[in-house]
Image (cartoon, rainbow, N blue to C red; front, side, top):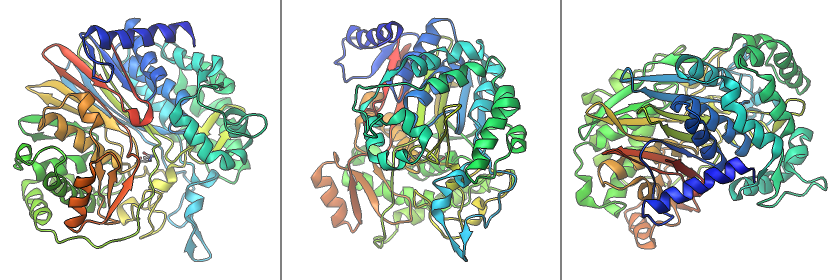
Amino acid sequence: MPTALAAILLILVSTALAAGSPPDASVRGAHAMVVAETAEAAAAGLEILKHGGNAIDAAAAAALATGVTHPASCGIGGGGFMLIYLATTGKFYALDYRERAPLKATPTMYMRGGKPDEALARDGALAIAVPGEVAGLDAALTRFGTMKFQQVAAPAVRLARDGYPLGTHLAGEIKRMAPRIAHDPGLASVFLKPDGSAPAPGDLIFQKNLAETLVHLGDKPADKFYHGELAAELAGFIDAHGGIISAADLAAYQPEWREPLHRAYQGDEVYVMPPPSSGGVVLEMLGMLEPGHLVGLGVNSPPYLARLIEVMRQGFIDHDQYGDPAFVNVPVATLLSPEHINQARDRALHHAAPTPAPTAAHDHGTASLEVVDSAGNVVVLTTTINTIFGSKLMDPKTGIILNDEMDDFAVAPGVPNAFRLEGVAANEIAPGKRPLSSMTPTIVVKNGKPIIATGGSGGPTIITGVLQILLDVIDFHLGPRAAVDEPRIHEQAEPATVIIEEKMPLETRTALAQMGYQIRVVPMLGGVGAITIEHGSIRGAGDPRKGGMAAGY
Ligand code: DON
């Protein structure tokens, strides 16, 4: 293990022990905190903070390091959303660096012989949307960072060049995907052993070409990624594999600064990403729960969960109205109006028992991270290449794994995507359009000061995972460790099946089944990370579901 990483992991553990907490309690810090989905990424963020970087610098470093150590989930071939609270202005900033459909994309591009071929939107070069990750990190650093790109990229470069021990989560993904990985020479050369077998947890993974690419990006990463040699290489690779992204697509990519959405909940103010993210759905669900006296029901009690299920269902019905605001008029003001929320709550309270339906596929890709610095700045970002290993294509020369974000569009009307979200008009494919996303970075403030930073991964379970963290912390006063560890549920209207983690007590699951809910028990839902800030104490918890880690000082 590289010495710097070992030193930081030591700080991380000793911080928890020094605070007198058992190792499974929230990590505490008096000054700053990074929560990420790998220990290496949390360490990368902490290293940057300790070298004087701010939360934006640290978030960029942790995102790049996550791209190396969680390469099945995210990386510079993908894109994301970043929510920033800046202490000096007391304002929120929402950065959308979501991928865009290629300029040659059409609503019928996945139709073959009169029928939609969904596999084309998930695997292979036609599934790739124009990556936004590098443009987004560059825009955030340029506007609010204090460090150059190479400084924040240094931990990621080290990890990619010198190797990192394969974590259990990634080892499982590689093993499961080994036959698919074997089809792509780029992925196989990095993630399979020379005899074609999957590496074991603890084996070192090297991504030397990716390390070189990160160095090649220099301190003007967007110029280098979207123009010139690198852009020509990527466009050539995609073209050779039957894709339609050209150098013109890359040159046209721009991230967007947007106005965050916010709404009061129990006296706090909750800030989320606006469309094309689904943050508004979390606000609507909170609105439906506002007068709910949840504490009286008890955390994860059957009546509490039944209330959540109904609220989640109503929220996901309205989720269909979200899309890229440059192309569709998302009626956010109406959806978040008291009248609409009252009607939705009424439906939630009187909904009859649901009808059974086929179940949704879930994977646990994507990555979220949360950072608080000593000046009080807060960053939550969520980044993805969509499903595990994205399009399952790595450009071997650059080491970049390309996303399959086109599957987040309506592949065709009424056709569900990998997460069983059905294709609706607002999310129809158009050239240059951003697909609807479930990624929901969230920051809560009390009296103008941030108190909670949270986000998650796992497709639509991000929305419901973030909701449950907010309720656990705000209503039930759980610390981040306990909130993240609580078993979670997920319901998304279609299919009308409630997904429940297996660690939810059997009597609770039985009680829900007796209420008429169709239940599917899964080993785990997606990962959620959380930081709370209270009376000068910062507490953080990564999600053990994915090997997440908090590092603070
Ligand atoms: O943006 C979205 O909603 C999806 N691309 C997220 C995918 C994801 O979380 C993968 N894991 N289940």
